Amino acid sequence: MTSVAGTGAVGSAEQLRRLQAVTDAALSRLGVEDLLRELLERTKDLLHADTAAVMLLDPIGSELVATAASGLEREVYLGVRVPFGRGFAGTVAARGEPVAIEHVNHADTADPVLLSVQLAAALGVPMISDGRVIGVLYIGTGTPRRFTGQEIELLQLVADRAAHATVARQHSLDQAAAHVLQRSLLPTHPPQLPGLDLAVRYVPGAESGVGGDWYDVFDLPSGHIGIAVGDVAGNGLRAAVVMGRIRSALRAYAMETDDPAEVLTRLDRKVQRFEPDAMATAIYAVIAPDLATLTLSNAGHLPPVGLEPGGAGHLTVVKPDLPLGADLRIARHTTAVPLPVGHSVLFYTDGLVERRGRSLVAEMQRLAGALSAGHSAEQLCTEAMTAMLDHDAPRDDIAMLALRRTSSGTNV
Image (spheres, rainbow, N blue to C red):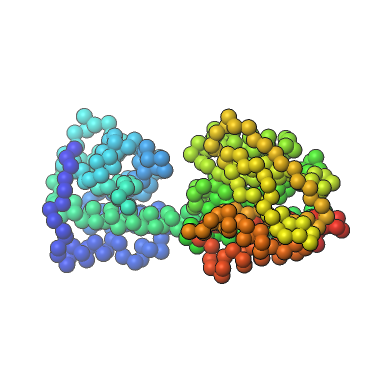
């Protein structure tokens, strides 16, 4: 294999026109796979090749996966994977520069890409986005061929355009999928539970988009009621997926014990075993069957705001243990607080109170002071958003859950 470099910028108007032919606006309406497939058809015709294909690097960066092809469709159907740094495509990705083979010696190669259709010559270029290789675009011919510097330059320009379009389209699709996942997991209306007035809010961040913030409320066979609010580090589809797994696991562990600390301990064990790169904060509380007591365990989360009838809001004193995914050796604790009739509690994530250049403690205290005792749960959510956002869209996503114990024993 020979590493090659272009012989200068493509200077002719004809070459620029030909490049535009494979990257025109018509492609912008296609999904990732369809976009790449159409681009490969045009590239193959443009460079008079017999085959063209794109292999994208998997999320962990260990293998290239056949994603789209023209003339090598079987690679995609079979899900061909090539280790990073090995074989033709793997070498292109590892070097981060064009590689050309003018005459393939099939007796000496075990490369599935080159052997699949008995290619005699191949040219591969890296797909690079933000300085990072995300895949490989390559063409092949059934007869030996010497690729010119201008052809190499042109294929690299196509790969650069393809990389940009692929990353942008994947980001857009990830955000859309994350929105759908959030909407399916975080219903806008909490369940109606006798004796409690409940309200929830979720608002995606203007800068971060959909993330891993979540809330949950459910009744348990023991008669207890489970309340959870948490925040998975990061944003986008991966954070939303991890959030969904954590939320489901917490529900399962809550069915086995009414001890919030034990639930979070088991959840932490699950996170560290099956989500080793994830980090999350969470607060889990159970309300006693008679609704008189709220017992909480805090995994590195922000303290909820409590409001007593006729009194001012205050930050509930709850011992903060380590976040989920940090250290299993540290024991978790519980805190029990009374929940008399008329008492309200607001749980929230950090997007509500974190502001650049401002004290987090001061912002939490400002939140507590902005809430009004005696208001409904829905009014508490509205007050909190109005007071803390200063009429601006939130930068980070926000999840909130408000509850108020009612005197009537039914929701209001």
